[in-house]
Length: 294
Image 1 (cartoon, rainbow, N blue to C red):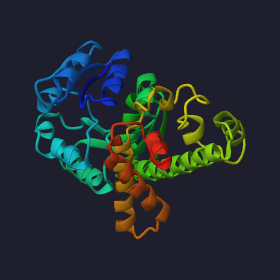
Image 2: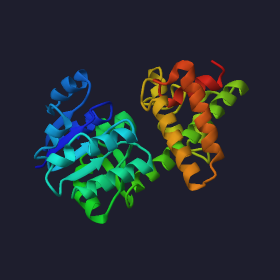
Image 3: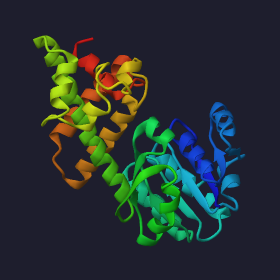
Image 4: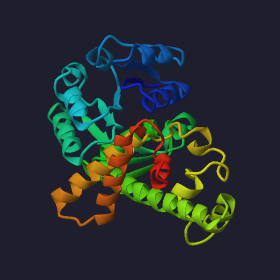
């Protein structure tokens, strides 16, 4: 079994690291939050003093961090590339901009390391159940080396291309998700105005042309999908702040590449308004409240 350094033990990173432990790997964890480290210890993850300390002697270094600047800093300034052995595998599961992902790959290559960018989809529930989808960017050799570890935390692992390919797939996917949730939410608001029950709309749309993941897994009204955050006062789930982050990344990529994404731009504006109204911590499906005028 491998020695794995896992840097970033938040809502997603902690259950992912715990699933690696379940598969028999030795996991050393790093996080800025003592509460997260305490929770990690209860799940078999050994606390390290620093990222460099965790990286020393590790076979694999995995990161789950908030932004591109954090991944680049961990790769470039924390000392992990100086203390890790040549050939150590670096797996970044953060959702970050494509440019930062490629910068991280370059830093890893210069240090003689294999690396992949591997953002995930499936939310906290998927992280706990190890049913995430992982979108992977990197060389064929790096992907094949990373695949067994990624299979410990997810059920579908897709090689999306070279460096940055995973991040490209993630932001495109989540742009679809944000747009879809707005459409589903608008439909339920209209149904309410027309006197149509939530269940009736769900029964029709979920089995016809309106069917989509935002409806059948994260239905924005309580009742039709018992596991959706709408049944738990919109507690994440996937926070609205994170949806806005991903939509902004998509818009930055669209601007840089010259792509036309008017619906993506509108979705980013709508979620920015929703966050500004105090809903950044609520599940992104809670945007239905704003559409109701509440």
